[in-house]
Amino acid sequence: MRRSGLLIVVKLLLVACSAGCRAPAAPKERAASSLIRDVPFLKQKPGFGGLAVLWYNGVYTPLKRLTAFAVAPGALIGALPPAIGWTAAGGSAGDLRLLALAFFFFIWQVPHFWLLLFKYGEEYAEAGFPSITRLFSTTQLGRLTFVWMLATAAASLLLPLYGVSRAASTAYGIVALDAAPVVLLSPGNGHAPRGAFIGKNLYARAVMALLAADAFWGP
Image (cartoon, rainbow, N blue to C red; front, side, top):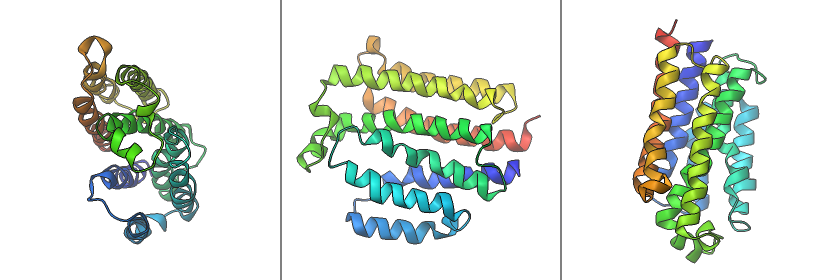
């Protein structure tokens, strides 16, 4: 179960992480194409899959027009792919390993989104969405995001603590990999949000690769 579960988790997370890299499309068209594309995955576990569709399109998307902090409840979307994969492979929804993994990706979503707003925050606001860049200065937003990046690093410690990763090298690698984007956004480094954004995305993919490798070759 462990190997198949983690492989499904990795596949679902890669789909979720790559969604933002596609060309812009009308919201309804994008939602429809995503549903069609993800049907094979959603059928694996319709409960969590249905919740993901409902939460993203029925809760998170409308909240974007109401508050600049919609990313907080919206981050649940990042926690659902691990739950879909884990339970589809026969794991328990209450397994502490799943909760640790889901919590890690929940926390990761917030700095991921705010780093993106360093570049597109004004465009976001001009499109009619409340933007956190209108509430905080660049320096303030940098410090706030930096704290959330530290929280992501702290959340990564839950992975070896609850047995998501079994090899010590995997645990050390997960924590060490988060150092680069954190340093890039540290106040003493003058803030480098673009590099931190790229580093944060690469970090998520590296964590998935390490966990998949650990499932096959760990002790």
